Amino acid sequence: MGLQIDIAAIVANWKALAAKAPTARAAAVVKADGYGLGAAKVVPALYEAGARDFFVALANEGQAIRASLPDDATINVLSGHMEGADLEGLVPVINNPEQFFRDRAMRPEKPFAIQLDSGMNRLGMEAAEWAGIRDEALAAGPAFIMSHLACADEPEHPANALQLKAFREMTEGVGVPLSLAATGGILLGPDFHFDMVRPGVGLYGGMPFADAKPVVRLSLPVIQTREVQAGEIVGYGATWTADSPRRVATVAAGYADGILRMLSSSGASLYADGKACPIVGRVSMDLVTADVTHLDEIPAELELICPEQPIDAVAGYAGTIGYEILTSLRHRYKRAYL
Ligand SMILES: *Cc1c(COP(=O)(O)O)cnc(C)c1O
View 1: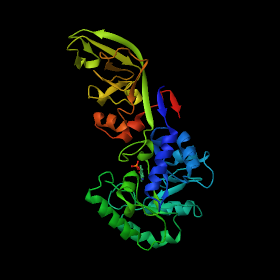
View 2: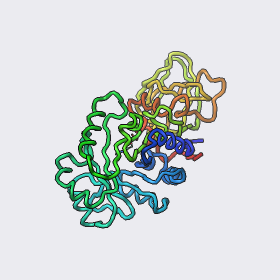
View 3: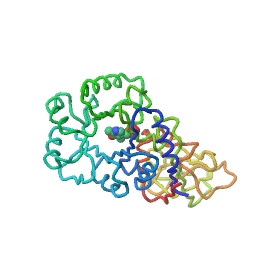
View 4: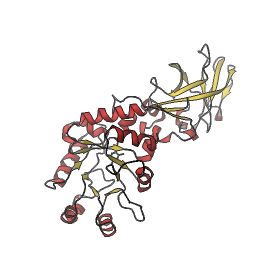
């Protein structure tokens, strides 16, 4: 089965998030190849469902999906107008005055948008920069003005209210559509929704959208099973020693496929029809070993990502977030789209 990606679940998650912000347009963030799941499959399905506003990180990601979308869909580029970028058919989200002047000089009639920094200090214009070009920028007619929240996945974090206040102050009276919320911001409630919301990870089944439908299932073919005697070791570095006779299965995927090496003896398991088989020893480049002693029968495949161990659970064992698990899944898997 390999990597199974449920496109209908992505569409359902998009609709569910859109319904939580009924006064806003729901865009779809499809950067990093649709969070690793395949923008070429995800984007047309979301368009079909009604999405018209797409976000990518880089111009070349935008070009990769432009031809698959009708003209009434906009593709917004979060890195803005970088020197040398091919922005034909795309909308750069301008991040600083330098980008603004470059963009207006080179594409005077073409659409653009603006990102303001409301406190995250990553992308976007600071209040003083914005004040300096605000009149000229507004006269040029930006498609929308956006900002991004640093702590939206922590509803109680004081940065949320501070950023909301800063964004409101910077955009007072602009008369242009506004956008602040990604997945986490949608869940913070209507104050954060403005005119457009930009869900990403929630579409793909990740936290903080706890009600997301699972999108990804990952099963790994068993190559070999062996009996290991008490005292024998398994894997590189001999980090695991059998304390009693065990049966160990070796599956055909490893850290080169995005099964992070941090999952070695981390408590993470491979699953056989819902039964946990703890990963033992080190994850190697192309192989993972799991303790299957308690199984009556060894299935042809064991699952790493499944309802019993969704992406955020895998992420927890690896000390990371669901986003990184998704975007680490590589192209060696046989992919099946539902
Ligand atoms: C990645 C990103 C999003 C989507 O964020 P999620 O947390 O995945 O929903 C929205 N806006 C910006 C600016 C982003 O960089």
